[in-house]
Image 1 (tube, rainbow, N blue to C red):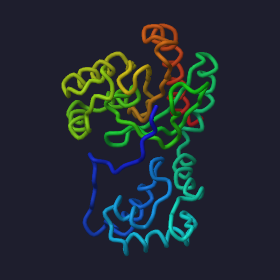
Image 2: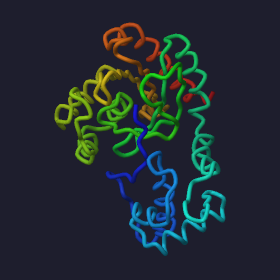
Image 3: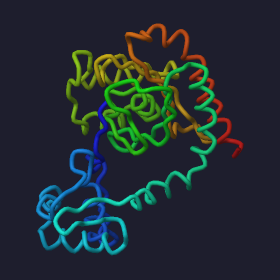
Length: 268
């Protein structure tokens, strides 16, 4: 499964007048320009990927280097492990992931397939927790990986927690593409799938993201009744066909999602 580099949110671009700190935003863009495809970059490459001038990119890179977030050999720049502090700050500030991990571990032990937790950010799903059993596809997803919401079970499950007009807005803002011969790219058809997930309380996506990958998801709901995340089980269709996953794993997955929701409600 491909790990996609973070990218700017196409659906939501808040710029609240004088409150918008452009230099800070540009610094974040420089950080986000590094990815699996571009782990080490020259100054010119960073400037090209961010739309900054070489002088502007240089100032930001040198600032990040002084703070310990970037290192350089004099020509190439790369992020340092300290950049993980930024993501850890989010994870450690959200008690949800502390209560979810043991539940997910128990689920993986029961079903013998990998389990992930994700949150919706604009048109993407962002993976915030993952418990693996074994490598299921060509590449493994990690915390912080992003995938399109429209063709993933995690994404559709969380879209199901939104009103239809918001769902349509996000679908229209998405770069809908046929990733496989099974991928739905018609907006109305996708809305119907989201509505189905809303009615039944779970969502199954069969080989729409990648050939051979089947995934099923259930919502995590907070005390206000709002879907704040989703859990999924993923597997290879030749080992666990979609119908088998639905019949044998869905009950355990839904119970795990309900347990995480209950723990959130009581603050466990």
